[in-house]
Length: 283
Image (cartoon, rainbow, N blue to C red; front, side, top):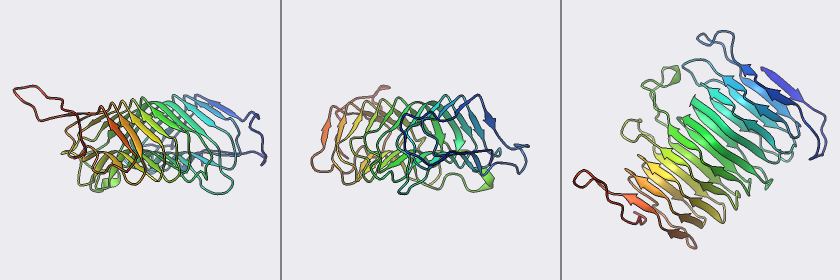
């Protein structure tokens, strides 16, 4: 483990935690078999801030976790941090003594398997991911049981190297930019771009946004390009407005009862060198 910080267990949302500026954590030889299993572990670190930190795995492999969060705390915040060749950029732990809130703004995550995984938060609110770029082969941001959050102005790319890290077959797993799951109520995904690179990306299903078990969601002003499915809403009503899609096999195959689907545009097949924009309907 690169850095391991454990503070005394306590309950104080106004307590200052440790701050980290301009730290890079990587293996001794990034081209060799050297990588941290966990670059940084924070436990009971209330209101911690990370500025311009970088987490590096082994070159050409998915290796280790950048930031691992556990224990009770209020929002750990990341600004302009980077992750390369990691199995996961940020991972939270689920359980009764969970952290409340997480903020990551303007972060760059490239050539990683997964971006951010915020598991069952047991109704602790706030996950805020604003700005930045997530170029991953699995999922960009996945949230469960954490209501009242937002993902905004993020560019999600499906990463499809000719040879997957470690020499495995490239990208046979499913990819989705954002997954909102089980109790992440009142969540919003707005102003994001989802690029799947369908046709050059292996055999996995490419989905822009997956939504299930989370009430009163908002999906607005996003762009979906080269995907199998733009939006997969399984069982929860959502407000889906002012989105646009191009070269997607299906826009929204299922519309849960109570959803509002309005003013979404789906770019059709080119006609005389230009595209038409009919109003998108579930198809």
